[in-house]
Length: 213
Image (cartoon, rainbow, N blue to C red; front, side, top):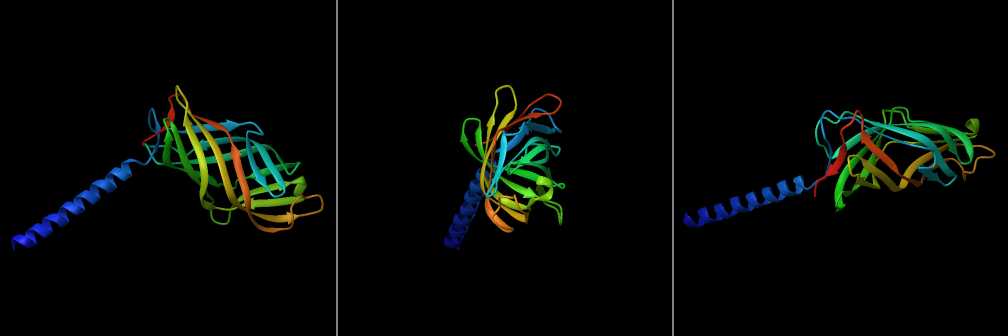
């Protein structure tokens, strides 16, 4: 009986230790935080500060991002992008997001105030980010996809975050490849790369940052 109690005690201790380790791991996940809640964050860029590169060349636009309301500290931040004044593959272009959003996941601390993130592209059913260049000569679309890496965020003194995507292996589909369009045919591609530099601040004052170990 005493031996059985000892075994039971060891099992309970092991479970408690595992629970403590899991709690510690959970608390170590970095989070997006704001100086007051609910908070909405925004970011914007001029053409050339963000670039989506495909086999046919670059897509560059003026951009604006607005987040969904951040009710409390969270390891994820969802933003809705808008693109204007676009150029794609050396041609005038439009980029229509059709309600697609980017969901950033804070994953690890790199150094003081610097964190790595991955990003998901989340689209409504049947929708995608559509790129139309040259009046329709070139058409491509980016559908929903998860776990794209890596996006670096850096806290800015006084409040705010710089967001620097260096994301590779982005999947996209060329739907139209007419004469004068630089693609090598229609179909699914996986060589997309998204790079850039965005400064994000909280709308209406206050500040937003990323924190955690």
